[in-house]
Length: 111
Image 1 (cartoon, helix red, strand yellow):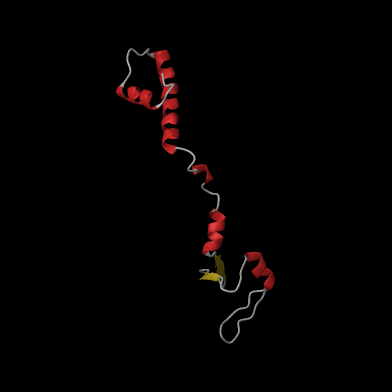
Image 2: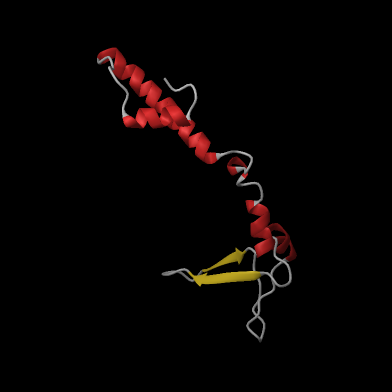
């Protein structure tokens, strides 16, 4: 698409391009010359509202309804159980370590 620069060095963005790129009055554009070329790279800088809409829902996996600490302790306990089961088959345990004792109090069902 070709546009013409006016006397004030302003360029009109074709309506089709503006619609496709979400450019409205007040939109900010970043222009950078491409080195070694006679081209200019133009990038639309999204406004805060658009950025917020893009991020909306991105943190649902981190919901406050979940207890991340308890999840981590449970995951760690499961990892230790798996590792302990593998090790027990090679070297049977005779006692628990202090870490095992702490996890037993934090995580019910830990062996």
